[in-house]
Image (cartoon, rainbow, N blue to C red):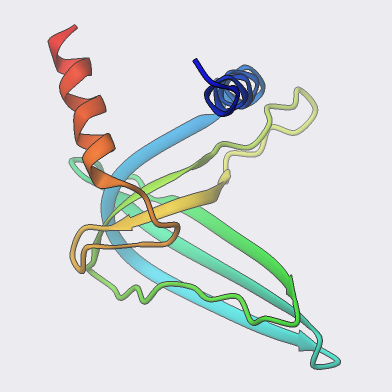
Length: 138
C-alpha cells in the first residue's frame, strides 16, 4: 500500500468516524427548486439552493439545502426541474436536546440526477455499481 492509499484511507476513516451517523442518502422526485445567487462587490459570490423532494414510496417530503461561497469564480449549480428523479447524498443536522425542531434541512453534498444522467460533483459511477453489488453479495 503506497503513501497515497494510506492517506486516502486515513481521511476516509476519520470522515466516517466524525460524520458516519449523520450521512443520509435517498432517492425521489423533485417537487420544488429555489436557487439564489448573490454577488458582493463583483468579487465574492454566494450560491444557495433549497430543494423539496418527495422520496419514492412515501408521502413525506424532505427539505435539502446547498450553500457554496467562492471568491472570483461564480459557483455553478446543476439544472433541476420539477419532476426530475434524483438521488441526494448529504448530512442530517446535529441532534440537540434543546431544539426539538421537526423541520430538519439536510445539507447537500452531492446530487445525482437520474433523469438527465448528470452529477453536482462528478463521481465515478462504475465504482458505485461495484459497491452496490458487493453489498448485495454479503
